Length: 337
Image (cartoon, rainbow, N blue to C red):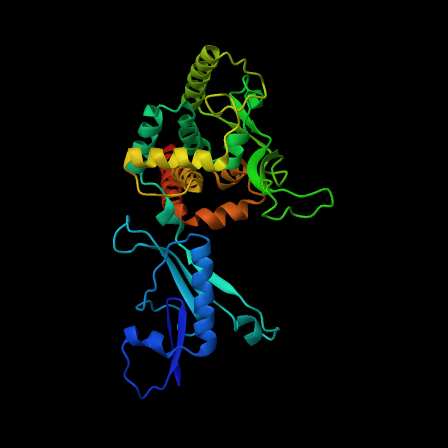
């Protein structure tokens, strides 16, 4: 007996039978068939689009029941950006208890904007009729998270040093009642709420210096926002969100994501999530020669090793440029001797 693992299914068949892949799904054991139907129901309930691909060959010697791939149709033939599967037997093989598990690998470099795409997105955000679209440019220039961007207030600016202080993050959280229990659905009251709170770690509370062009553009954006508020009779304060709605209110993360998606479409850039802007900034910073520890501090990572593990793909060229600089030093030493 042997097992053929396809996308989302495990098949056990006798190796004397010559079956084509399209027929394999007709030979599922009862447990695997039940598992597959439950998985499909979960995906449907979450509104996640999927297709059953009977030609995937991935992890034949260790995955069980389900293998999967996240595929983009916008980056050529090698469109898989993430792939993995269930490792249900792994812990047990290592001497532990039977434990459901899942593993995957992610190609970070496939989630980054190219220089051309970055320029197109920058231009589209600059042309946007929604002033807060400047936040897209700001994120590409600082690498901050969406929640941090929406949590910025005008009082967080350090005018003397032309820097921005990250002091809070915005997100939608589950509401709890007076006893500390989650509010269940179906009671006719909202079960989630938008909350601004301190970042999750001390390192995430940080100060980011802005390079002159970004600072100047931020000041231009501030003046435009003030003009709009004056027309609407709004008096901004130090607690007014920098990247606010036209009425001076804090953006809902999903609403800002919608603005981002519209700007992507206007720029004719393939669909990505907002967090890809952070990855793009980090990669460009390393390509420009930024020290890994400095970049780690700007991104708010707890350890430089986290930054190194995430963005190691950008370091080969960085190493070459650094060694070329050492070559210049080597030559100057010889000539001075």
